[in-house]
Length: 314
Image (cartoon, rainbow, N blue to C red; front, top):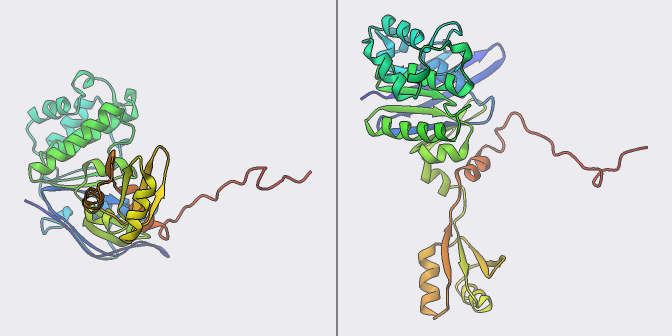
């Protein structure tokens, strides 16, 4: 199957460097989440991969070729960058038929992707009557039209209702299981955590991380264990003897920093301590992401001071 290879990629707009010496590879058979703050260069990098912009230097290749050199590119690479791209006066079916003719795609695929994206019942309605979520589905249908080996989606969950979010999650996983190369840009950390296997993270145009998602989280969020016991004093003393720090929470819960469930379980069992609940307090993708990108965020809000913090002058 086909990979995406970005090598020393740089893109400058006047004095602004949107992408800065970027190198990473997106491999088939997994979903790669493409993350970064606003202005990090994600959309620019995707446009460079798709030949919509020319790099200042470096290369962005799909299967060893520049996108612009591909014959019938929609049959090799499917992409959604802008859900508003379809002409509002066309029906969804006519929009897809035009794309199919231009890329030598059998017309039967039009009806297949309309059904797959849940648009079959509204296929003859004009696109200008569609909601944002319906336009997103149409953009995804266009990306899948050529049954491509490579799929790039920019914020595919935008505008989707809960059912649609579950659907796109399952779709991405299926595409990866089929051996396709899947790159998905998103600002929704919890949603990305539900489908991504690997992460590429940008900040101010530069690569901050290129790693499996679980390793990304574990490297940045310290492990914790939650314990519930009726004898908190005994638990605190036991853990202190073995070098652990425990903090009391509500309802007989204790939090143990830098600890694993197996280790705490063995200690409490050997001591004969009654444990009502023992669980890992897993770090989240959002926590790890915010820790990594704190210094790479271009737009940050200043906390608003309330009247209690800062009296207003009369």
